Length: 144
Image 1 (cartoon, rainbow, N blue to C red):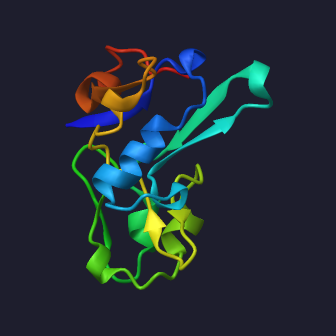
Image 2: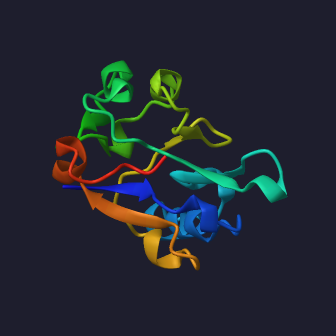
């Protein structure tokens, strides 16, 4: 099982190509508010950027908070999302410890599902998919 890592954010130029790829390819919408990954300035243009995305908690508190089962734990961490079960209550977003679940204008939640579709769209190779087993076993350093 693989998860998305923001592995080399010192290279990020804040172009948001990853966020647009997620919105368009995964969620079939072309809106900043429908992406599972967000890029933020870490304090100004000269200080770099941060990628905010699901950290693949195991067990995921967002799934525990979901009253309808729309968010269910994914093997290796993170969640599987069943949008048809979502009632847009926002409990998942409130439960996320890193604020990585985004609510759009009508309260629909968007979260990284660790599909990796955004990776190819980063022009500076900032993102990567990594094996969960390697990360949890400590055989690979998790980028900070």
